[in-house]
Amino acid sequence: MDIVCLGLSHKTAPVELREKFAVADGHLGEVAARVAGSPGMGEAVVVSTCNRVEYYAAGEDAASLVAALSAHLGDVSAFRAMRGEESVRHLFRVVSGVESMVLGETEILGQVKKAYQTAQQAGATSRHLNKLFQRAFNVAKEVRTQTSITRGAVSVGSAAVELAAKIFGKLDHCNVMILGAGETAEMTARALQLRGARAIFVSNRTYERAQALAGALGGKAIHFDEWEGEFEGLDILIGSTGAPHAVVTQARLGPLMARRADRPLFCIDLAVPRDFEPAVNDLDGVYLYDIDALQGIADASLQVRRQELVRCEELIERHVREFGEWLAAPRPVMPMNPRTEGVK
Amino acid sequence: MERWFLIVSTVFFFLGFAYSMFALGAGVARPSRWSFAIMLAGFVLQTGFLHLRGQAVGRCPVTNLFEVLIFLSWAVVLLYFAVGGAYRLSLLGTFTAPLVFMLQTVAQLLPAANAEPVYKKSAGMWPELHAAVSLVAYGAFALACVAGVMYLVQERLLKRHRLNSFYENLPPIAELAVALHRVILVGFVLLSLGLVAGFFAGHTAAATIFLAVAVWLPYAALLFLRTLHRVSPRRIAWLSVGAFVLALAALGALGFFHL
Image (tube, rainbow over all chains, first blue to last red; front, side, top):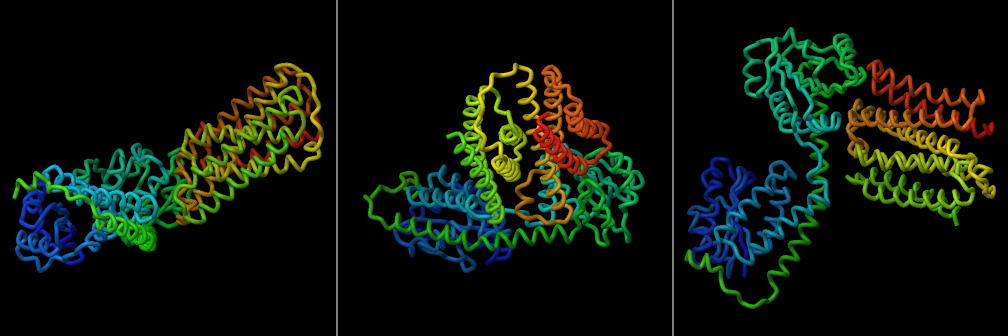
């Protein structure tokens, strides 16, 4: 019994090629069943995400499996063919986030789980791929719990969200205001919204732009000369204006902070030139992070994740060996999956 | 036997502190589980010591400064379990363990630690209630001091953008501020009850009343200013540390002058 994987990813193929071979979520099961029913094929799972298209197959010999997959896909020159241990290792790496564009991201695990379940429901899997994928999910869990590969924020937006959580705890009572209407500020506000931030206010010199962004975020537009009126209820203030000088100074913020009682204020300065005077950080209860500080946090987290790669690979390698031993162990001959037999 | 309970419990608190520091240094994400287990073991042994000591002296074991400090340590750990769980302040253990270790070590170095316990019939409900409730209040103030230090550490790390493993394991700063206020409030209410019990117990010497008010007043002022929003959480954190140092000095004075 052998296992193969034919795949292309963001590392090996441009988006034009990936989208050509992409399989819609609703068709994953059907395609897997059709592939599994091809001559020389026993079982199949199709994984298709925005960054990768991969066909996993199990059957009597690797050459027949690759030939069957090639016949199904047509031109496979862009695909990387992996056999036996190499394909097992690849799957374990994929589900662990080691092969992801953002190292250590966890979304891929859910996507692979869904692809496997769909194939299983379509009757395209049997003992070998069932065992392989279940082992893969265990590997992913171990990697996540025993290493720091998923730790920390690796983008400016997620770094801001992590900091907000470290200042306020839950964000569901937090009100956010954006000064300006920059793209990074919008992304950061969306990330805060996803974590539960309650209300978003947008204030911009051009009121129409404030209205447009507020509309996109489901928030409220404020005239630029009126933003201080909303200050008392704010928890997070994002600066993203194109002003050539600091918009928020210590002298301006000091009296406003005195009116807020004892609530902390998280200031995120995404503008260049900066919107916040650095001395603002010296005020009691004010925590100021500019774009460099946030990027530094993201870079440091990425560095930690890269350092964890060695530990991840050691862990994955152990599981690859164990799975190889299981695959090679003699066992009684079982009938082929009756449902895929039917497809033939 | 009781003394061994105390020695081993002190070792546990030292180990709890050492393990947490090691885990933080090594970047372990969740050092709290082991810290919690070690704190629990220390607490069980403390309770065993106080139980045996209570039987030996025939009343609440707060008959000398040595026992008072051990009872105070026990109250700190008791409140740590109550508050730590409620606010998920996992790292509170890291900061509580060294305080308890220090209190128990100092207590065991006192001459009173080597004196044989003397059995004496209880003087009645009010004196015992006064002593026990006041010391649990001190435990709350000690925990407030610990939470205050945690707040100041987290604030400094956030302000200076030093996001190390301490930062990762410390609770959110806004939650720390809330917890700090509540622990002070609990301590204040208990101390007030303790003072009322002291009045009924007949502790009316001028020096005793002066020391009691010297401890009570700073916490009353702190809570009053907090209610009026006239003082920032950072200052409350500093004040909670200062007020506890004052409270410890008052406790030392009570023991020294046998008041």
